[in-house]
Length: 196
Image 1 (tube, rainbow, N blue to C red):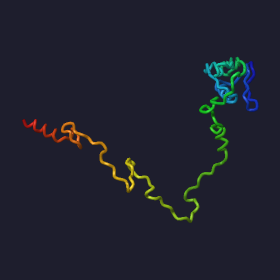
Image 2 (cartoon, rainbow, N blue to C red):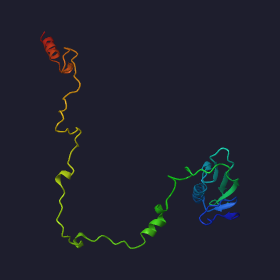
Image 3 (cartoon, rainbow, N blue to C red):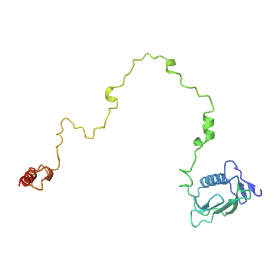
Image 4 (tube, rainbow, N blue to C red):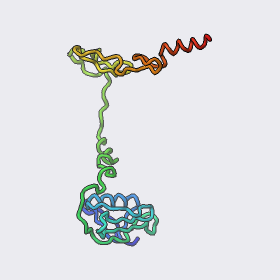
């Protein structure tokens, strides 16, 4: 394999032409870390299993990277890395946030955390006896069954709510308090029509 094998130098990502990275996944992780470290947002023009092309998001900047699948079909090689950034460094958005994996989320951190023995909680029969009085839950605090009240509880000095805020008017007899469906005149006129 020709080219320099990628290695982290003091936890700093340094990219050069002809560098070779293990595989596509590792190359993408290296690029993410590079973007976070440098503080320059990039735009990925090609990002598939065989090629990776990215440019700086600033239109005036000449930074560009080309990488491709190397001869063995697994490794990724940086073919061209043109220039350094000529734009202003921006720490806003540069690969942070949703795509960042915190060290506490990794498998290694989990294994390290739980590598020591964790004592199980003893059975309730083995708990120490406490000399304090038993506290029973308040009945009012218990969750009640059924749907919660939708009406507002009124204060003692408040007037009760009106039964109806809008008065309906009948379109047949034009009286207030009922509508045409429950109008007595309508029912009496239909009954009279049936008798004839």
